[in-house]
Image (tube, rainbow, N blue to C red; front, side, top):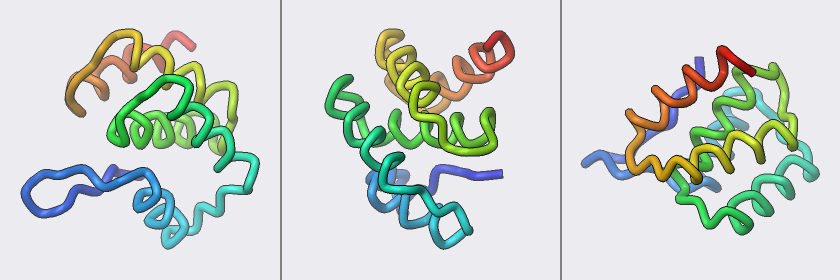
Amino acid sequence: MIYVRERKGGETVTTQEYIAFLQTKGFKLPKEALGFIAFGQGYTAASDELVNIAIETTLKQQFCFDGSYFIEVLERLQKEQLINKKSARNYVRAFATFY
């Protein structure tokens, strides 16, 4: 399992730090995936926390990075205006079972 790492004090790591963490665990995201991530974050104005959850969800559900799936997850998280990791994870669990 992949978990979004937090700094001491509960502060969420940046998306760049999360991507670097994934690379240390063997997930080598191609440039195209990094482009989708940057585009999605800019397009939705999502926080690093939501982007990290969308990346994690995409990798868990698709077993690789699928840009269109990532954008859809990120749009749904942003549309629902989920403000914390717990509510986002609960929403993603429900969403992923129907996708």
